[in-house]
Image (cartoon, rainbow, N blue to C red; front, side):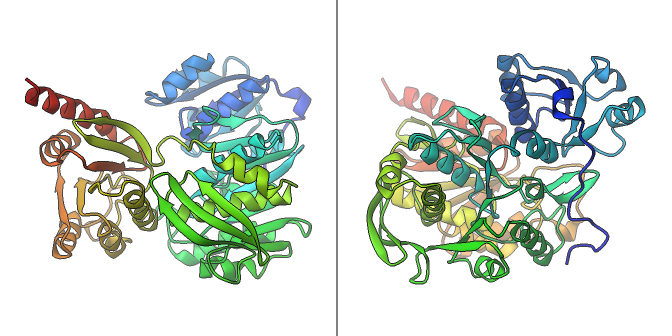
Length: 491
């Protein structure tokens, strides 16, 4: 279980709210920190920050917002006189800006604490948690609430296409936030979501992930238990009834539990499910009573769960089924979630964030339903801390067997220097897939992988790139090569 010497979470002293006007962010170019920088600026704070190797798209985002950042980390970066320093997860204990803040008496806190203290005090926090689906469910819930006439706040780890943003300030009503189970800061090894003051919480699934900070599934369960335990008695826990572990842990909740899923025991149930090229249609049954059909633009079983949870929040906030069912059809999704990047020479190129085996398998099945009659190529970059390890060796073989073609980039090499017996064995993975009848292989780098695909993928097929990062722009590289291929064939 979680190491006994670790506190649940760490709260540092915050200055009075009216004393904070200037805020400095250490690690401002991270996805969450960059979004938070924009939110702080929109709320009227003067914001600056620092980071190393700031590249697009975050450098572009910061420039467009007029937010200045300084390269690297140095004590003089605080000379502009901030009232508060926010410490990102990337920041280590020996960071010179942290030392300078302590020396100068400038208060410093973690990003989750600052967010909780500055934005979640005045509304109803809706925390979306679980191993998978957090970003989509957060964005979808926010859209449904907004489209139905509420003015929600939102903070999400992806760019929502409906709002073209990672955040909404809201006006003191529901505030929907992606509840990350990753640790908070060098001085706070508890998960981020413990700072978010949950009133309504979605718990979609529990699986092993983040192998760089968790040793066992038990440690992850312990932290989700902590989230459940801080829900107040007048709160609500929305629990995925199709995940046995979620259902087991939900039994400890002192808050009211609303279950959702496909099985007969769920309070919110999807029946008569029909995947199609538009997404997925189903009938929503609430407490045994059929409410009507939902025509969701989201494909896949996992997105039915996400939609049920989002509707559950809407019901709790007083919205009607009819209003929610109308609104869901206008949901545009999140960038890098089954995102169509373009089509060239008859090949459709998609981008997706899936990198855990369960998410990969569900995504591949969803795409085959969305694009019937087109052959799917799954292309994966094992880049995350967990993906580079062999903890999911067999699970990857099962997941990628859902596609006729599976190709891989060699694992990204980082400074963590994993032992050989800890690393993902890509040769073995390819051999296992080939034995299962999948066309599988790997290439040593991005250019050669893109070149192989440009030669091998026939017209009419679909290529989905899956990675927890930008995959070094392989999407545009392949599209360019396919356009060249088309030009060579055209007289």
